[in-house]
Length: 486
Image (cartoon, rainbow, N blue to C red; front, side, top):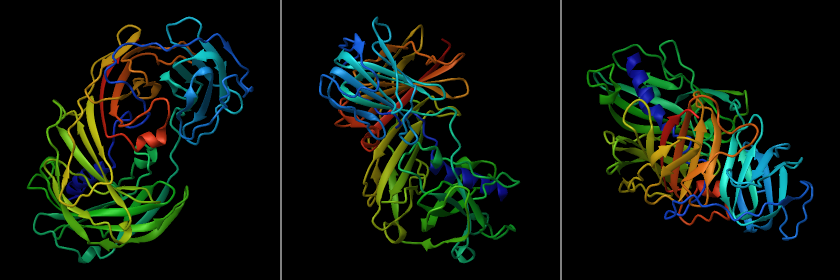
């Protein structure tokens, strides 16, 4: 039965979803019909003092919360803010380079105490690179607005503040008997932040001596099991603690999770939870909520080779985050979902579809994002976006071929330990580029994994966008990767 519990934990825990880090992170756009390596119209001959906020074009510096581009077209002056991606705090002393990587006359400056570098004598779209020690370098190709804010992610990643919550589920001992050879189980989890890639959304849970998560409850009428006393390691801030309650049938194969039959019988949820870092909240009781409806998901046909498909419904609340309430798959395409009443009154449903490479390593993926979905009557996932092809890091040029429907691309470069060293944002239609010369160097030593993420962002304007808004606009994304040694 402990093996059964471990299998169930795996089935339910993937609702937290280890999505490729390029799937919906940095946002960018391209013209889907332009595959040329178009250069910017730059005349980068002079620059201003970084503390001089006046300029001949009349554009004053603007810090864009969360990062992005704004203001009129570049006509003499370009303001670049470099900030910490975690909190928008300024990064002083960062190196900023403006100009094509393979062109002469590039301008280099360092940011002042406000994280600002102001360049003059520049016109037209520009390539902007920002780098500083202890942070991932970033290059944006085709910056068209006179104000740009580039957020840099600290490396290595900083520890996520956590809290511990313990408790039980209301009425656990009197719930439906699972029957002979079956089990009743629940996985307790917490609502995510609005940023689907936030490390706080994927906190590793402690396990017991049998490698079963402490946030799992399990009951079998024929095996002596513990009562439902769960312990959850969670993020800080306002959130909902919830559980999906299921009856599982291992179908006689206790060591094989793939053929388990899982039927949802209900949910439990507790609102109003707001822990601080290091805090322990004890004796929390998750009230049952049995106002549910049966929902079916149609997955369609994925791109070739991407047969590992899942679907995650998110309950989106106003102030307590996003609840990844369950995990659908083609073999588990129908299940009960909570109606938006009780603890979820006023919330809406989003739906995420994921298709990954079949096998132990996800070298390609395709995702679809549906927002404010009426799940009544079922969910039909949109057609899957094909991953980019011909991804190449050969020589000093990095290139790929984009798929139909993609109008946004990012490219990340990571070392052998999966630490991202350089992130590229393509805003001008190019599908090939070279690395800028900057200190510290953007590429790591040794083997490098290059991952291309292409996205469909309806209505995207590369000259006027913010990352938070773009995160709410992506409808599809697909990724592909290659590994090379520079």
